[in-house]
Image 1 (cartoon, rainbow, N blue to C red):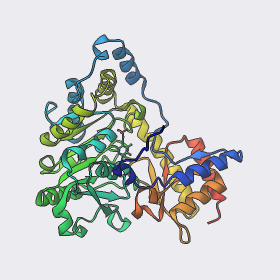
Image 2 (cartoon, rainbow, N blue to C red):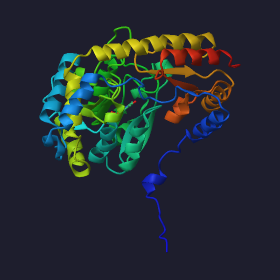
Image 3 (tube, rainbow, N blue to C red):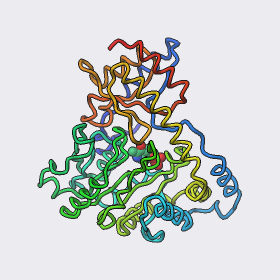
Length: 390
Ligand SMILES: *Cc1c(COP(=O)(O)O)cnc(C)c1O
């Protein structure tokens, strides 16, 4: 006798998976024997550096690391993270109270609303945006209010357009620059405006800074925590995934306001038991070690960026070279939607891209290319795209 399995309302409330159609088409095209070039996913293809792997191997052999870790992370890991913040952003943080390790930043992003959002509270969510902001909101019982990111605004949310009544009910706000998917970077003045807005309306700011090190032409991006008042209102989520090609390792951290770090820690201590200490030791090797590997990652991404942007503009897919991130956010030409252009590109060329509307309604009219294949494959993709009849 089978029981009736009913999904909880929060699962029913999940947004539809908009990539199902494209996944299906990808299988069909591959079945026709066409060689697929995937520029769809945001997962670096480069390997993790040898000195980081070696640190894991050595730490994995130490019995002290075989026990449960502390949920907040090794003090030495938090210290490596806060020292790195000091040297990279000149932001001073207390490793004891203002930092917590995460099982990848996605884990912290998904969990923090459980600590600070009550059912019915509004959470301000960028649209288009990294899907976890919205999903974490739904899981906490919060109500997302989507802030459109428009080209004419440099893909920054227009805070003045948020109705007073919405701001009043808002508990938390998500921002993330350098931005996935639009690849926009935020000037410090924007971060300062966010801090003032948050203070005025009593809103927690969560800044996702996963792409801080994927910048181009030597133009370093800023941390939200650099601006006055930021630490009074917010936290920043940071990841080793994109900086050190460590997506599979699952390690990141959150830094900033002590009460917010404490609240997130309360959730974590009751849900997970932290990051395998050997992985934290590898994280220390990454953060405190030779940053030449990060320089090399930027050089490779920049070369790829230039190949793709030149190729896309030549065929009439308008895009400006991103100043950061490994994404190119291209406008869909007249007569197409994000979905049917994605589908046509895949059908005609075997190149997989991501439809912009998969990141939210305001992503309609765009497609996203990832720079996560080598230059030969990227050149091949550009050659194939030249045969596209738009
Ligand atoms: C990749 C990514 C993350 C998550 O990275 P983790 O591997 O979980 O640390 C967070 N935010 C954005 C915008 C990302 O693209």
